[in-house]
Length: 102
Image 1 (cartoon, helix red, strand yellow):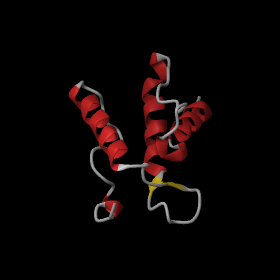
Image 2: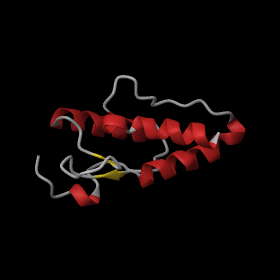
Image 3: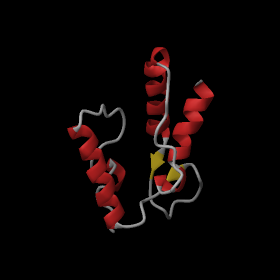
Image 4: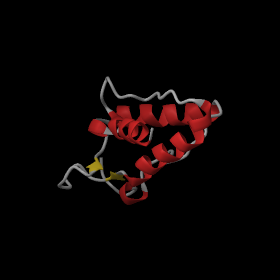
């Protein structure tokens, strides 16, 4: 299960999460739910968000446009409003990108 959850969570971040086939849902049997949440949380927290100009493939860069960023913010807020439990990330830019242009 550890590999399935970790690889599933990692694949969501491919291309900064902007793929038509990003697996954003995961079905987990109830007895393993808390473990799956913790594994996915660790993947999210260990994924660096940085400038697209940074070399390497161990981080995700920005989304494609302001419109896409606003759409993402809307869905995060909608999830919160509907009672979702946020375990990593959240609204707004990551601290290291708060003063970034564009």
